[in-house]
Amino acid sequence: MNDINIVEPLHSKENGGSRGGAFLCIPNFEALSPPFSIKHGEYRITACDNKLPHTKNLSAPAENNWGNVEVITDWEEIEALNSKTLKVTTTIRALSDTAWVRPGFHPYFSVTQNSFIEIGVTRIDIASLPHDSIQKYKVASLSEEVKLTTANYTVSINCNLSPITENLSIVFVIWSDKKQQYICIEPVIGNQPAQDGLPTPLTLVKNEELVMVFTICATRAGFVDIL
Image (cartoon, rainbow, N blue to C red):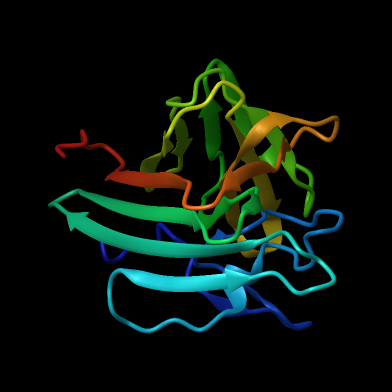
């Protein structure tokens, strides 16, 4: 599978910035009104070492006090003859009396012509998506998989959460950049969605944890996943 870029490689844009890779957005996905201050969260811009698991402490600035959390992240890759699995496990633990979080996972996938996404009974043709505009799809069940089909491979994406609470929800955000031929399929976690279609932040009390396990399973086109 090394000859197929399933996760789009990280690259710089002509007008600045970068695209590609897979990122954790902690404490927040996308932009939020105060107390959140940095789009896609502080986790993406803080340095980490190369040892697993990664541990980071994230503290809110005084003017935007969403709290203080510890983030512990581990991952593993499992490669077979015609399939590959990436599993990312992240624990968010509140260190302050309360902490607000709306985390997300932000992988970019390489696509081909006629690629499509299935979320439950909904089929989304990638060619029909608007350029550089996020589309939001709330899953019917927290355990529901999302499937991407391309000419080269199929991939499933799911997120397992612990603990499960009554108001917890996952919204998959789909974002397309046709020029670079990639797609983002981004699970965002929080309480039930607001009017904008995205989950609202959830509150963790001191020492309370949210555990997220993101699993991406890819299978070369024409083969059955053997994992």
